[in-house]
Length: 390
Ligand SMILES: [Fe+2]
Image (cartoon, rainbow, N blue to C red; front, side, top):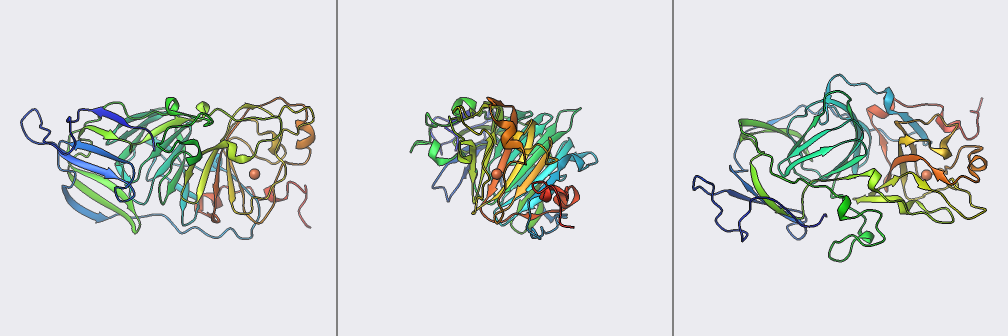
Protein backbone atom coordinates (compact mmCIF):
# COMPACT_ATOMS: atom_id res chain seq x y z
CA UNK A 1 0.00 0.00 0.00
CA UNK A 2 2.01 2.83 1.31
CA UNK A 3 3.13 5.65 -0.86
CA UNK A 4 6.28 5.72 -2.97
CA UNK A 5 9.52 5.57 -1.06
CA UNK A 6 13.17 5.57 -2.09
CA UNK A 7 16.02 4.36 0.13
CA UNK A 8 19.76 4.20 -0.57
CA UNK A 9 21.27 4.40 -4.02
CA UNK A 10 19.38 3.61 -7.21
CA UNK A 11 20.14 4.41 -10.85
CA UNK A 12 18.41 7.23 -12.67
CA UNK A 13 16.44 4.84 -14.92
CA UNK A 14 15.03 1.44 -13.97
CA UNK A 15 16.47 -1.65 -15.65
CA UNK A 16 19.68 0.11 -16.63
CA UNK A 17 23.30 -0.69 -15.76
CA UNK A 18 24.01 0.21 -12.12
CA UNK A 19 27.60 -0.46 -11.17
CA UNK A 20 29.38 -1.17 -7.91
CA UNK A 21 32.46 0.88 -6.94
CA UNK A 22 34.52 -2.05 -8.24
CA UNK A 23 32.89 -1.81 -11.67
CA UNK A 24 30.60 -4.85 -11.48
CA UNK A 25 26.83 -4.73 -11.86
CA UNK A 26 24.39 -4.71 -8.98
CA UNK A 27 21.74 -7.43 -9.31
CA UNK A 28 18.28 -6.00 -9.87
CA UNK A 29 15.24 -7.67 -8.27
CA UNK A 30 11.62 -6.67 -8.84
CA UNK A 31 9.32 -7.74 -6.00
CA UNK A 32 5.73 -7.29 -7.08
CA UNK A 33 2.28 -8.42 -5.99
CA UNK A 34 -0.71 -9.60 -7.98
CA UNK A 35 1.31 -10.79 -10.95
CA UNK A 36 3.20 -7.48 -11.21
CA UNK A 37 -0.14 -5.73 -11.81
CA UNK A 38 -0.07 -3.89 -8.48
CA UNK A 39 2.50 -2.46 -6.05
CA UNK A 40 6.13 -3.39 -6.45
CA UNK A 41 9.62 -2.50 -5.33
CA UNK A 42 12.84 -2.58 -7.31
CA UNK A 43 15.84 -3.63 -5.23
CA UNK A 44 19.56 -3.58 -6.04
CA UNK A 45 21.61 -6.41 -4.52
CA UNK A 46 25.35 -6.76 -4.14
CA UNK A 47 24.96 -10.48 -4.88
CA UNK A 48 22.58 -12.62 -6.87
CA UNK A 49 19.34 -12.98 -4.84
CA UNK A 50 18.85 -16.28 -6.65
CA UNK A 51 22.05 -17.94 -5.41
CA UNK A 52 21.05 -20.75 -3.07
CA UNK A 53 23.42 -23.56 -2.13
CA UNK A 54 21.06 -25.81 -0.20
CA UNK A 55 17.37 -26.45 0.53
CA UNK A 56 16.17 -28.66 3.36
CA UNK A 57 12.71 -29.42 4.71
CA UNK A 58 12.52 -27.86 8.17
CA UNK A 59 10.77 -29.39 11.17
CA UNK A 60 7.35 -27.70 11.41
CA UNK A 61 6.11 -28.05 14.97
CA UNK A 62 2.67 -26.62 14.22
CA UNK A 63 -0.29 -28.80 15.02
CA UNK A 64 -3.64 -28.48 13.31
CA UNK A 65 -6.20 -26.17 14.88
CA UNK A 66 -9.46 -27.63 16.18
CA UNK A 67 -13.04 -26.46 15.61
CA UNK A 68 -14.56 -24.12 18.19
CA UNK A 69 -16.75 -26.76 19.81
CA UNK A 70 -18.97 -26.41 21.67
CA UNK A 71 -19.67 -23.00 20.23
CA UNK A 72 -19.54 -20.39 23.00
CA UNK A 73 -17.93 -17.07 23.90
CA UNK A 74 -14.41 -17.72 25.08
CA UNK A 75 -11.73 -15.91 27.08
CA UNK A 76 -8.01 -16.61 26.91
CA UNK A 77 -5.23 -15.25 29.12
CA UNK A 78 -1.98 -14.74 27.20
CA UNK A 79 -0.12 -13.84 30.43
CA UNK A 80 -0.57 -17.51 31.41
CA UNK A 81 1.48 -18.66 28.41
CA UNK A 82 5.19 -19.22 28.97
CA UNK A 83 8.27 -19.36 26.76
CA UNK A 84 11.90 -20.23 27.38
CA UNK A 85 14.17 -17.73 25.57
CA UNK A 86 11.95 -17.82 22.48
CA UNK A 87 12.39 -15.88 19.27
CA UNK A 88 9.66 -14.05 17.34
CA UNK A 89 9.54 -16.61 14.53
CA UNK A 90 10.13 -20.13 15.81
CA UNK A 91 8.61 -19.30 19.23
CA UNK A 92 5.17 -18.45 17.86
CA UNK A 93 2.39 -20.42 19.47
CA UNK A 94 -0.82 -20.68 17.47
CA UNK A 95 -3.89 -19.29 19.20
CA UNK A 96 -6.40 -19.41 16.36
CA UNK A 97 -6.58 -20.10 12.68
CA UNK A 98 -8.69 -20.68 9.61
CA UNK A 99 -7.95 -20.93 5.92
CA UNK A 100 -7.43 -17.14 5.68
CA UNK A 101 -5.28 -16.28 8.68
CA UNK A 102 -3.23 -17.81 11.49
CA UNK A 103 -3.15 -15.83 14.74
CA UNK A 104 -0.22 -16.58 17.04
CA UNK A 105 1.45 -15.09 20.07
CA UNK A 106 5.02 -14.98 21.32
CA UNK A 107 7.04 -13.41 24.12
CA UNK A 108 10.38 -13.04 22.35
CA UNK A 109 13.70 -12.50 24.08
CA UNK A 110 16.12 -13.99 21.52
CA UNK A 111 16.94 -12.82 17.97
CA UNK A 112 14.95 -14.76 15.39
CA UNK A 113 16.47 -16.59 12.47
CA UNK A 114 16.23 -14.94 9.07
CA UNK A 115 12.72 -15.72 7.91
CA UNK A 116 10.37 -15.20 5.01
CA UNK A 117 6.66 -15.94 4.84
CA UNK A 118 5.76 -16.87 1.29
CA UNK A 119 2.10 -17.57 2.09
CA UNK A 120 1.06 -13.96 2.68
CA UNK A 121 1.62 -10.69 4.51
CA UNK A 122 2.22 -10.69 8.23
CA UNK A 123 0.95 -8.15 10.73
CA UNK A 124 2.79 -7.94 14.05
CA UNK A 125 1.27 -6.06 16.97
CA UNK A 126 3.85 -5.32 19.65
CA UNK A 127 2.02 -5.35 22.98
CA UNK A 128 5.09 -4.66 25.15
CA UNK A 129 8.85 -4.49 24.76
CA UNK A 130 10.89 -3.14 21.89
CA UNK A 131 13.36 -4.24 19.27
CA UNK A 132 14.32 -3.97 15.64
CA UNK A 133 12.68 -5.63 12.67
CA UNK A 134 15.61 -6.07 10.28
CA UNK A 135 14.64 -6.56 6.64
CA UNK A 136 16.15 -6.57 3.17
CA UNK A 137 14.63 -3.09 2.81
CA UNK A 138 16.33 -1.75 5.94
CA UNK A 139 15.66 -1.73 9.68
CA UNK A 140 12.47 -0.71 11.49
CA UNK A 141 12.87 0.09 15.20
CA UNK A 142 9.61 -0.86 16.90
CA UNK A 143 8.11 -0.65 20.36
CA UNK A 144 4.91 -1.11 22.30
CA UNK A 145 1.77 -0.25 20.38
CA UNK A 146 3.39 -0.68 16.99
CA UNK A 147 1.70 -2.52 14.17
CA UNK A 148 4.24 -3.79 11.66
CA UNK A 149 3.11 -4.89 8.19
CA UNK A 150 5.60 -7.24 6.54
CA UNK A 151 4.96 -7.95 2.86
CA UNK A 152 4.79 -11.48 1.53
CA UNK A 153 8.24 -12.97 0.91
CA UNK A 154 10.13 -10.12 2.58
CA UNK A 155 13.18 -11.63 4.28
CA UNK A 156 13.46 -10.36 7.83
CA UNK A 157 14.32 -11.14 11.41
CA UNK A 158 13.26 -9.68 14.77
CA UNK A 159 15.91 -8.64 17.29
CA UNK A 160 14.40 -7.84 20.71
CA UNK A 161 15.97 -5.24 22.96
CA UNK A 162 17.56 -6.86 26.02
CA UNK A 163 15.39 -6.65 29.12
CA UNK A 164 11.63 -6.75 28.67
CA UNK A 165 10.34 -9.49 26.31
CA UNK A 166 8.67 -8.41 23.09
CA UNK A 167 5.13 -9.69 23.47
CA UNK A 168 3.76 -9.87 19.94
CA UNK A 169 0.39 -10.82 18.50
CA UNK A 170 1.11 -12.17 15.01
CA UNK A 171 -1.34 -12.40 12.12
CA UNK A 172 -0.17 -14.53 9.22
CA UNK A 173 -2.46 -13.83 6.28
CA UNK A 174 -2.91 -15.78 3.08
CA UNK A 175 -2.89 -12.58 1.03
CA UNK A 176 -2.18 -8.90 1.45
CA UNK A 177 -2.83 -6.58 4.39
CA UNK A 178 -3.31 -2.84 4.01
CA UNK A 179 -5.37 0.15 5.12
CA UNK A 180 -9.11 0.02 4.42
CA UNK A 181 -9.69 0.94 0.79
CA UNK A 182 -12.41 3.43 1.72
CA UNK A 183 -9.73 5.59 3.37
CA UNK A 184 -7.60 5.74 0.21
CA UNK A 185 -8.00 7.85 -2.91
CA UNK A 186 -8.07 6.12 -6.29
CA UNK A 187 -4.33 6.78 -6.44
CA UNK A 188 -3.62 5.52 -2.92
CA UNK A 189 -3.40 8.69 -0.81
CA UNK A 190 -5.04 8.64 2.62
CA UNK A 191 -8.23 10.71 2.53
CA UNK A 192 -9.20 13.37 5.06
CA UNK A 193 -11.64 11.12 6.92
CA UNK A 194 -9.00 8.45 7.53
CA UNK A 195 -8.04 7.98 11.21
CA UNK A 196 -4.37 7.88 10.17
CA UNK A 197 -2.31 9.03 7.24
CA UNK A 198 1.10 9.03 5.60
CA UNK A 199 2.61 11.12 8.41
CA UNK A 200 1.91 8.27 10.83
CA UNK A 201 3.50 5.56 8.66
CA UNK A 202 7.15 4.64 9.22
CA UNK A 203 9.25 2.76 6.70
CA UNK A 204 12.92 1.78 6.45
CA UNK A 205 15.06 4.89 5.94
CA UNK A 206 18.46 3.51 4.97
CA UNK A 207 19.92 0.26 3.63
CA UNK A 208 20.82 -2.54 6.02
CA UNK A 209 23.92 -4.37 4.85
CA UNK A 210 25.46 -7.52 6.31
CA UNK A 211 28.22 -9.84 5.14
CA UNK A 212 28.32 -13.60 5.32
CA UNK A 213 28.37 -16.77 3.27
CA UNK A 214 26.13 -19.83 3.47
CA UNK A 215 23.38 -18.00 5.37
CA UNK A 216 20.19 -19.84 6.31
CA UNK A 217 16.71 -18.39 5.71
CA UNK A 218 13.65 -20.17 7.07
CA UNK A 219 10.77 -20.01 4.58
CA UNK A 220 7.14 -20.66 5.46
CA UNK A 221 5.26 -21.67 2.33
CA UNK A 222 1.98 -23.35 1.50
CA UNK A 223 3.39 -26.83 1.95
CA UNK A 224 5.22 -26.20 5.23
CA UNK A 225 8.67 -24.96 6.23
CA UNK A 226 11.89 -25.07 4.22
CA UNK A 227 15.37 -23.88 5.15
CA UNK A 228 17.21 -22.30 2.21
CA UNK A 229 20.93 -21.65 2.46
CA UNK A 230 22.02 -18.61 0.49
CA UNK A 231 25.55 -18.23 -0.90
CA UNK A 232 25.61 -14.67 0.50
CA UNK A 233 23.82 -12.78 3.24
CA UNK A 234 20.37 -11.62 1.99
CA UNK A 235 20.87 -8.21 3.63
CA UNK A 236 22.85 -6.90 0.66
CA UNK A 237 20.46 -4.32 -0.83
CA UNK A 238 22.20 -0.99 -1.44
CA UNK A 239 19.04 0.77 -2.56
CA UNK A 240 15.43 0.29 -3.59
CA UNK A 241 12.35 2.23 -4.52
CA UNK A 242 8.65 1.56 -4.93
CA UNK A 243 5.43 1.17 -2.99
CA UNK A 244 5.99 -2.32 -1.57
CA UNK A 245 7.95 -2.44 1.69
CA UNK A 246 7.55 -3.20 5.40
CA UNK A 247 6.01 -0.41 7.40
CA UNK A 248 5.00 0.40 10.95
CA UNK A 249 2.19 2.40 12.49
CA UNK A 250 1.65 3.00 16.20
CA UNK A 251 -1.79 2.48 17.69
CA UNK A 252 -1.41 5.76 19.62
CA UNK A 253 -1.36 7.55 16.24
CA UNK A 254 -4.85 6.24 15.43
CA UNK A 255 -7.25 9.17 15.78
CA UNK A 256 -10.58 7.81 17.04
CA UNK A 257 -13.78 8.79 15.28
CA UNK A 258 -16.38 9.75 17.89
CA UNK A 259 -19.97 10.95 17.87
CA UNK A 260 -22.97 11.99 19.94
CA UNK A 261 -24.22 8.43 19.81
CA UNK A 262 -22.39 5.14 19.82
CA UNK A 263 -20.21 4.71 16.76
CA UNK A 264 -20.25 1.32 15.03
CA UNK A 265 -17.17 -0.93 14.99
CA UNK A 266 -16.07 -0.03 11.43
CA UNK A 267 -14.97 3.43 12.62
CA UNK A 268 -12.17 1.65 14.46
CA UNK A 269 -10.99 -0.26 11.40
CA UNK A 270 -7.26 0.05 10.81
CA UNK A 271 -6.38 -2.70 8.32
CA UNK A 272 -8.07 -5.06 5.95
CA UNK A 273 -6.78 -8.46 4.88
CA UNK A 274 -8.20 -11.38 2.94
CA UNK A 275 -11.44 -12.23 4.74
CA UNK A 276 -10.55 -10.35 7.92
CA UNK A 277 -10.27 -6.82 9.29
CA UNK A 278 -8.25 -5.35 12.16
CA UNK A 279 -9.62 -2.53 14.34
CA UNK A 280 -8.02 -0.32 17.01
CA UNK A 281 -10.05 0.75 20.03
CA UNK A 282 -8.13 3.71 21.46
CA UNK A 283 -8.56 6.10 24.40
CA UNK A 284 -11.28 8.52 23.31
CA UNK A 285 -13.98 10.95 24.20
CA UNK A 286 -17.16 8.92 24.35
CA UNK A 287 -20.67 9.54 23.11
CA UNK A 288 -21.82 13.02 24.10
CA UNK A 289 -25.58 13.05 23.52
CA UNK A 290 -27.11 13.91 26.94
CA UNK A 291 -28.90 10.53 27.02
CA UNK A 292 -26.16 8.47 25.32
CA UNK A 293 -25.12 5.01 26.47
CA UNK A 294 -21.33 5.00 26.04
CA UNK A 295 -20.70 1.24 26.15
CA UNK A 296 -21.66 -0.89 23.13
CA UNK A 297 -25.10 -2.36 22.63
CA UNK A 298 -25.52 -6.12 22.60
CA UNK A 299 -24.58 -7.19 19.13
CA UNK A 300 -24.65 -10.15 16.78
CA UNK A 301 -22.20 -9.76 13.93
CA UNK A 302 -23.67 -12.62 11.97
CA UNK A 303 -20.90 -12.85 9.39
CA UNK A 304 -17.84 -12.65 11.65
CA UNK A 305 -15.98 -14.18 14.52
CA UNK A 306 -14.80 -11.32 16.75
CA UNK A 307 -11.48 -11.57 18.50
CA UNK A 308 -10.55 -8.78 20.91
CA UNK A 309 -7.06 -8.37 22.39
CA UNK A 310 -7.04 -6.12 25.47
CA UNK A 311 -3.75 -4.21 25.70
CA UNK A 312 -4.27 -1.11 27.84
CA UNK A 313 -6.45 0.83 30.25
CA UNK A 314 -9.76 -0.31 31.65
CA UNK A 315 -12.19 -1.92 29.32
CA UNK A 316 -15.42 -0.48 30.72
CA UNK A 317 -17.88 -2.84 29.05
CA UNK A 318 -16.07 -5.95 30.30
CA UNK A 319 -15.92 -5.25 34.04
CA UNK A 320 -16.93 -8.39 35.91
CA UNK A 321 -15.92 -10.75 33.11
CA UNK A 322 -12.45 -11.64 34.33
CA UNK A 323 -10.89 -9.90 31.32
CA UNK A 324 -7.65 -8.03 31.98
CA UNK A 325 -4.57 -6.79 30.15
CA UNK A 326 -3.33 -9.47 27.79
CA UNK A 327 -6.72 -11.17 27.60
CA UNK A 328 -8.29 -12.27 24.34
CA UNK A 329 -12.04 -12.67 23.99
CA UNK A 330 -13.51 -14.66 21.14
CA UNK A 331 -17.14 -13.99 20.32
CA UNK A 332 -18.00 -16.27 17.42
CA UNK A 333 -20.76 -15.87 14.87
CA UNK A 334 -23.85 -17.65 16.13
CA UNK A 335 -24.11 -15.99 19.53
CA UNK A 336 -24.87 -12.48 20.71
CA UNK A 337 -22.51 -10.67 23.05
CA UNK A 338 -22.38 -7.34 24.80
CA UNK A 339 -21.54 -5.52 28.00
CA UNK A 340 -21.40 -7.42 31.25
CA UNK A 341 -24.38 -6.97 33.62
CA UNK A 342 -24.31 -3.51 35.19
CA UNK A 343 -21.85 -2.06 32.65
CA UNK A 344 -24.53 -0.07 30.80
CA UNK A 345 -25.72 1.62 33.98
CA UNK A 346 -22.17 2.22 35.20
CA UNK A 347 -21.20 3.91 31.94
CA UNK A 348 -23.94 6.57 31.98
CA UNK A 349 -22.43 10.03 32.18
CA UNK A 350 -18.91 8.88 31.31
CA UNK A 351 -17.08 11.22 28.96
CA UNK A 352 -13.82 9.37 28.33
CA UNK A 353 -12.74 5.75 28.02
CA UNK A 354 -9.12 5.00 28.72
CA UNK A 355 -8.92 1.70 26.88
CA UNK A 356 -6.81 0.20 24.14
CA UNK A 357 -7.71 -2.98 22.33
CA UNK A 358 -6.95 -4.59 19.01
CA UNK A 359 -9.84 -6.38 17.35
CA UNK A 360 -9.65 -8.96 14.58
CA UNK A 361 -12.90 -9.86 12.83
CA UNK A 362 -12.66 -12.90 10.58
CA UNK A 363 -15.28 -13.77 8.01
CA UNK A 364 -14.69 -17.50 8.41
CA UNK A 365 -14.86 -19.23 11.80
CA UNK A 366 -11.71 -19.26 13.87
CA UNK A 367 -10.50 -22.63 15.08
CA UNK A 368 -8.58 -23.04 18.31
CA UNK A 369 -4.83 -23.63 18.41
CA UNK A 370 -2.76 -25.23 21.13
CA UNK A 371 -1.95 -21.90 22.78
CA UNK A 372 -5.62 -20.99 23.09
CA UNK A 373 -6.38 -24.33 24.67
CA UNK A 374 -3.48 -23.80 27.10
CA UNK A 375 -4.71 -20.46 28.47
CA UNK A 376 -8.53 -20.58 28.37
CA UNK A 377 -10.67 -19.25 31.21
CA UNK A 378 -13.48 -21.81 31.19
CA UNK A 379 -15.86 -19.68 33.29
CA UNK A 380 -16.18 -16.80 30.83
CA UNK A 381 -19.17 -17.97 28.79
CA UNK A 382 -21.46 -17.88 31.83
CA UNK A 383 -20.51 -14.41 33.14
CA UNK A 384 -23.55 -12.63 31.66
CA UNK A 385 -25.97 -15.02 33.38
CA UNK A 386 -23.69 -15.12 36.43
CA UNK A 387 -24.31 -18.81 36.75
CA UNK A 388 -23.78 -22.05 34.93
CA UNK A 389 -26.51 -24.63 34.62
CA UNK A 390 -26.24 -26.98 37.55
FE1 LIG B 1 -18.21 -7.13 20.02
